[in-house]
Image (cartoon, rainbow, N blue to C red):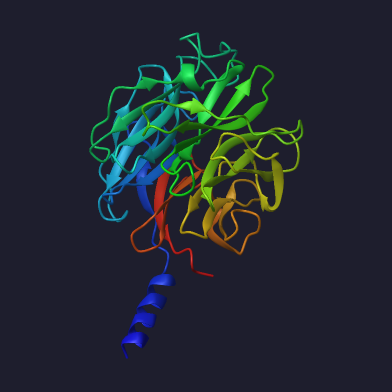
Length: 362
């Protein structure tokens, strides 16, 4: 009788209905900003959900953006009124990317700044030396996202000498749990050179975030270029990388693997099973054998599809259309009950929503 009851409870949990949409950020409603985009979602060790996005002064990528934040203490059922976590006057703050260092509990929020009027493709200075260029920064929180430190500029350590811009994520970073580099913090990045070529690499910290260094670029061909990117831990403490396409080649996700925890990478390749309408996608390891990938499967930025892999992205065991209709950027976090919390854009620049989904549903 007890065994039957336990099996019944397991089945109920594994095949629970997806949750309903909850508005977390909405322009000109719970935000004063006329536009909001680029979600980042983290569930902390204490069970707090942190949602971060760009509150924009107008619906363009560099528009005097502020970093806005909202918290949930009940697995995403309710959220605090959004507030500004950081703003830099008329400068623009872009590409939020969250990660938590588990031993200290410290949370890192990486982002990039653009000077007022500066644009991603607007002739900014090359390299890390010029303070008027695009900068890579982070802030930290030691109280589950309630308060944040002053920014730390890590451009000199991370921005390549040939880079016009750098971009973390957007989405999340990770901390390795296994392998010879267990405890290493990883933040995925892209950078753009003066010829508008984009490259992927990761920022690495082996001292709980005190110092950071840059791993090698992912090898790529002229026709396979990588852009906005996420990573997940692979079996044995390596990394699986999944990236948006850039400019050339087939509209498929670009992938690579690292056997040395992000210091070097395999040649970038296209995954024929993962269509990409040139949009960001989110990645999350669920357990020892399963990684979840969510993106707009198309056509265009629509039809958010959840896929699961049990072999670190080499094959895909299941696929489910989870968000029919308009769907753009997203970020995922594993909830207490085994569902996935998704912070996402319904292909709009005015609202960011949250929904809990069951990865076991078919």
